[in-house]
Image 1 (tube, rainbow, N blue to C red):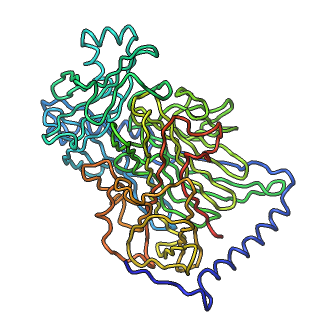
Image 2 (cartoon, helix red, strand yellow):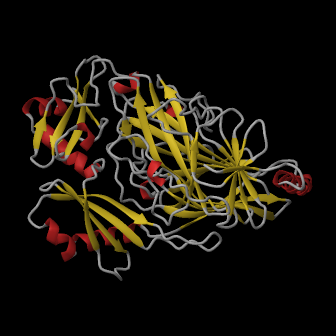
Image 3 (cartoon, rainbow, N blue to C red):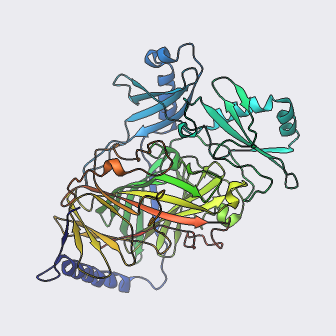
Length: 564
């Protein structure tokens, strides 16, 4: 790693930034001074963007009836288990082009393989078919088909019908290759739990290739746990489906004076079900601009996993399955899956309930900020993904945690969330400086990874205009120091054409694996990507104290501040 110390003498970069920021503060104060005494809420506008649900459905039918796809699936049992768009890339300040391509993944139960189909929505090119051995989580249809097998068992079916056994999606969701030395046959796991006064608890498997029920001597397969003792809230919902459209372009403006508006933020948002990455990536933000200048080309959470001290896991979670949460009366839909709320939307954490009236991304105004929030499900976990857009140019990405009833969530565990941040501060030509409590800023000239220390932060600067963005860790972000599973806190990489390096390489383990991306490539005056890891240990099911903004002890996420 080649790192260059920057002197603070002779018109240094920090001095220039200080002057710029000071000047902006003066101009901001003038605007504030002219503003009315009573602050009015931000004005949020949105318009649907990209392929709609009709386009999704038409593409699915096109793929299913294509001879190129029907040929490898002829005479075999198969099911479509995933459908997602593939984004088009654009230069830093060029308008984003809506996705024109898609990827559909079928599972071939006869050969135990994925049939991956890439195509275009306009059908202007031939479909491309390839194969993989990825074991994706089941969608709602596959989970329901596995449950039908369980219901045909005389004992279990009778108890499910009598509701003396409750069905829930467990973790892990399927049998993964790293669980056995032999080739994996597609096996979906189903959780069965007795009532509050019942000690019955079991996780069974359904071999989707043979249609046979599997029951385990220990009441659960490897990496799972089913004991008489369980923790968490009552769950509502199944596995989750990744074939639901929902993207919008959002603008956030600040009222000034009696009628004038100042546009603060402009970005594209993908709801979790339409987010990119192997496992989805929660709320995905694209082309984020503050006061007309680009801050980030893309920000999302492609990797999320959890490690237990014993017994359960570790697990790789997914961030596309949307869970129900509550939006208040008077809420209005801005676009499919994007809803504006006159007051804060509330999740499983505030409501202590897994029920709600909405799935997608809720938007609402809070003091000097506009907030986007969603609730996601991965097995018995519930994840809260939130972005706070402050009027002063700060973005606060936040991640929260909830749990539904399981034996595993009684055990101490650490959740690891990894943001991927494609910084394009005005242009593709950026420099990254590491700033510590002591010593001058350090210009990072090659790809590297590190763990956080007290007072550490980073400055990302446009080498053409001098505009900069500061990335500051949160006190709740934890550290990967000494944790071989967590791997790291910070990775600086040179950008590779999308969708290359959008997810990690995994390499047969739930642990993040970005090592293959560290190739000693130059990062000074380059298009750069930062991966930022946060690590939260939990041993209970209380995440927050009825706070609509995710600011509690269990809430990690850095602050990103545009310095103009």
